[in-house]
Amino acid sequence: MNLVVNARDAMSQGGDITIVTDNVRFEAGTEFGRAMLPAGDYVRVQVRDQGCGIAPDDLAKIFEPFFTTKRTGEGTGLGLSTAYGIVKQTGGYIFCDSVPGQGSCFSLFFPAHDKTQDAEVEAVTPEVAVRARREVEGTVLLVEDEAPVRAFASRALKLQGFNVLEAACGEEALSLLSDPELSVDVFVTDVVMPGMDGPTWVRNALQARPETRVIFMSGYAEDIFAEGHAPVPGATFLAKPFSLSDLTAMVSKQLEFEHSTAAVVE
Image (cartoon, rainbow, N blue to C red):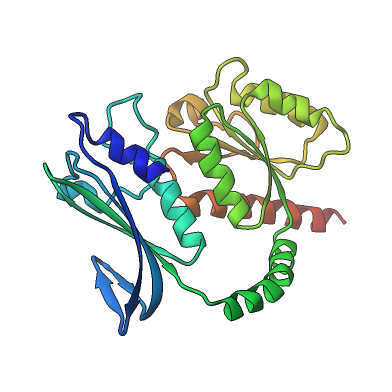
């Protein structure tokens, strides 16, 4: 859907969007740009448009989170990075060919499977999934007022095995935390939000949950590190734009600190 929406937005003067699916086989590894597609059978999906195309300098950055060529307020820069994450999660590949003034073609390659292989995967996957989740014990409360950013961050964390609770504002976060049986290890929150801002709701929450680790997200570092001090003791800062690996690595680091502190106390 993100690819089709982008194709539509690229054709301000109108045009056709074509979606083609087929089966392809590569007898040997095939190079696409800077990536190598391994030999094998694939299901290919192509989305073509007759839009404005993408400049060569921008083509290498289009799958980066928060990168956009649209005007301010017209896009979050998360559509293609989300599509990239979904494709990679399935073991697939995504590439883009584009000519300025002529249009773009996004090609998605998904490994093909026969029914026998699928049955074997179904028999193994549940056990593997449970084991992976047990290796990463942690619940994250994600608070972000922009729905696309929240969805992007939530998906990244869930893919790494974290349990994720979501809230669109500080007030909603505090409402969730009013349940004394709810266990949360890390707060990941935007700083500037309508209503209660990030530091304010976090300070309130920490009164009852002082051991919870905190990560602030913002594109304006100076706003939350006034005079070089974090608004909350021990809190860390994640600058926007950030990558999937930046986010998950920081959450993992905060969890490791929490667990090491708990071990010392015990």
